[in-house]
Length: 613
Image (tube, rainbow, N blue to C red; front, side, top):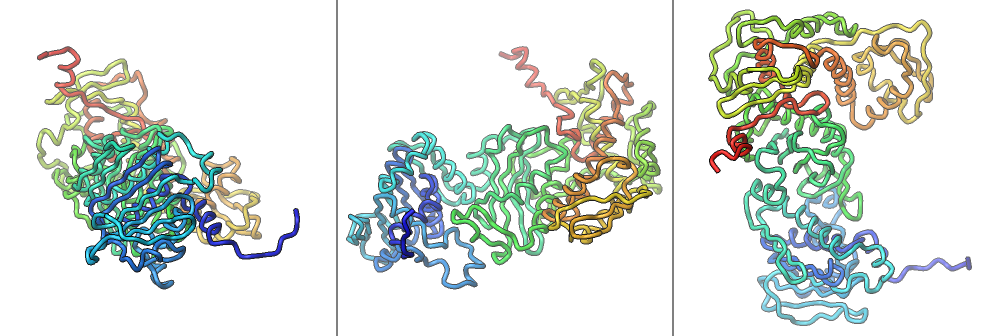
């Protein structure tokens, strides 16, 4: 390669390089222009897309507009009205702020910007003519119109990487939907090749969500609205039963900005850990609001990634908030089809099972100190639970699995519908399913899956009362090689290791000594396990690691302890299981995420047999 002297790049080439980061496809142009329209306070936005956005993208809004004397600056690189100092950059709340979008788009297209501020006598436009900007009067409605034609005409190689016109259009439509979800007070019109494709009228937030994401309507989602002194999380989370085969209905916003953040995705996924089956993806629309100086949005040119100042705290709080929202079972409190049911719980606290149950008037559930022979560290705590359905002795209905308070052995009277939401058992089908009758139809219960969840939740409650897990001392310490970057986590997480039954000490930055292990893990290869725990500890904090590992152990215990298929149960035993499900969190799914029960209404059964038709 011939030697070339170092020189400054031409402005046009600089803008085209920037366009490669900001404008990678037509949908990127739509995103940048819509962000500008929203920042301008628009209440109605019209999007026209021809030829998949390659031929033309036209965005028209009724925002405050750009004055005539600022139009030339608007299309100049690094010119913006949204920030003027480092302090403003660190606390930016506007969607756009980099001052690169218009110049980058104009460098790879035939570009015209028209604006008519309300205080101005007429509209003016600026367009790129043969590499020069031409400013002239124009006819335009109040607001701003940006017309982008022949995208990538000056960089034809970029066009080779685009998909079909239909694919590119639907990428553009996805961007509009993401923006519309976060801005229900704005009316959106989308035209495709001159024909109206979609219209999202100004509406309430719930109406906007259900109009765009129909799969989350009709009781398939739960509202969430929780906050602390400086953070708020609100939106809707899909029920585990409504999980999908792909993650196309996952929307997370930080201070109104749609983001794709690995930390947040992990927090949400972790919240669904023991209620989601296989490789399914939950649906959710969530909005996290926190002080602007607690999040850095200037991480990526496209502004789709963020960095939190206290990432662990955000991760744990988001995970616990969603877990608490998902905890109440439908067998405990029937779901509403509308997010309005969030009003039943004070917004200042996470939606917990206790809050959802507060209206039922049921007696408080008392956690029982029990015994178990299945795992050494639970020997003193869980045996009563394991025996709860072994042999499931017949008892007067309703049978209580949880103990009553000592001062009152009798349960306060409850409404019949609340006391028997899952109905009354009438038969066992093929030694697998329980058939129960309700006034509005019938319920079919997978008895092993249901019992597995009941035991699992009881085991977790019992273990929560313990301080540590019993451990076994090693005669010869086990030496484990670790990544030097994770060495500090050994000391930082000492209380975690002790709760899990480990006793560790650092020998060097690359090696640690294991002097005691949990009794259940004695004799197993711990190197890979410890390495993974250290990495998770660094990313997500102590609480997540401890809870996840504990739950894995208890899920296995519950699965092996639960009543098996082909076990004959009496009617009182079946009713005892149904009543326990009604008092158990997350009883709609087993530990592996499979559904535990299904309800069939009389109207559904009438349709099966064409009754009334």
